[in-house]
Length: 196
Image (cartoon, rainbow, N blue to C red; front, top):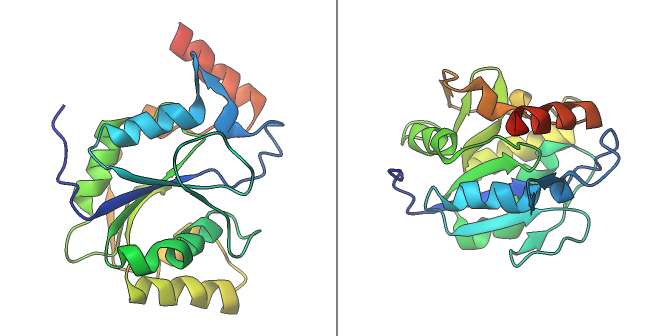
């Protein structure tokens, strides 16, 4: 598989959710013989990105660096804000790939589309009707918009943030690969499809 140019790229696996509907930490769900966290990590590594971090508010067995939410309870926007707080000094102006851990069918091909779509004239790239996963620039203007929404808004949806940034919205080429799982029923359906 051809890899995108990933100089100046980092990736964040978003595993900070409480997994209330699933009833178990989604990062620990087994996809085959691997925890979902390991599967998602391998898909990111296949793009060529080497700097991978995990945003999680619970302890996980992993060799990857973990950071917790600086402002919990704001959903995925918490993870984006925490990334800036934890990594901005070291990785300012990097391109950051945000990938939820609950995506058991995500592929390097899909992630490379996001990487390639974050061109010089945009601040964020995502697929139509799918705010996550996304590629986002770690730059001061983006941080300002994130904090403006957190501190001065009651709409914490990631897509609300994107309305205030320059965006490249990609057509969906593989809806299957963008599947996310929030309940045991959704998870079982994915596992059955993989096994079948």
